[in-house]
Amino acid sequence: MLESNLTIQNIPVEWLIKLFEYWKSKRNGRTMPSRSDIFPEEIHRYLSHIVLIDVEPDPLRFKARLVGTEIVKAIGRDFTGMYFDNFPNIDNLLDRLKALMVSKKPYLISDNVQWPEK
Image 1 (tube, rainbow, N blue to C red):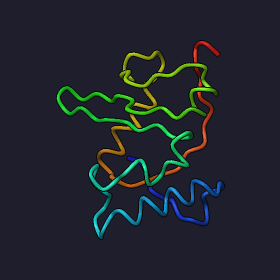
Image 2: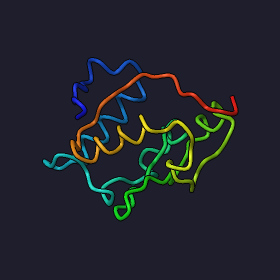
Image 3: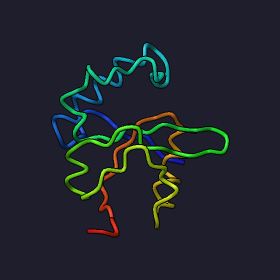
């Protein structure tokens, strides 16, 4: 299970703080906002740095709905519309996504991404 230790004080980047504040403002007293609460146009200045992921419940699969341009530049590939389980060596990420579905709490991780082509 993922532990949510995320606070404004331990977020190292200003735009992540703003994104976290947006996310919290959309919760409306709930554990997390619903999909219908999030409007990409309201966070347009951050979209180049994030990946929005759709969850398909049965069978459980994760699909990249939007891959930010800065991520595409870093990786060298746009995987918008692709399923995460089609990538090699992705088990850690899939485990994290599944844990997020259970905990419904934000968390911050700093990690190196291994991408086969780069």
